Length: 126
Image: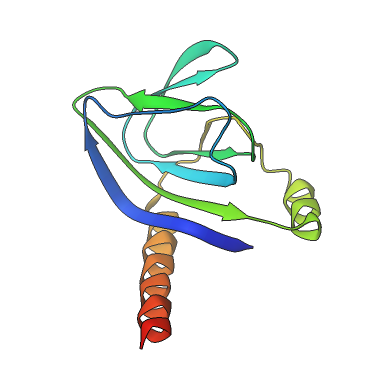
């Protein structure tokens, strides 16, 4: 797996929206900390906080704030065929918003991944 971009505890105002009709060119994992509106198969769906979305490469990414704020953790990543088979074996649903309860543990992992990414960049730039 190659992480292309990552962010922890990203907050936006009520005007926030993402419109990527052909996806982002890679996979995307979102950890939702606030309610949001996702457009899936042409239908708007209001989602709850403490949910996640795992977008496949090429899946349209259409989502926006629902309320005064939109907050999430996220990372874009690329995987090879062997890693794709691993994901499929885990039976994690793609392109579906899934409630998972308390996100604190997963959010901490994203925070640590951000720290490691920043450290790697500093070392590479020295």
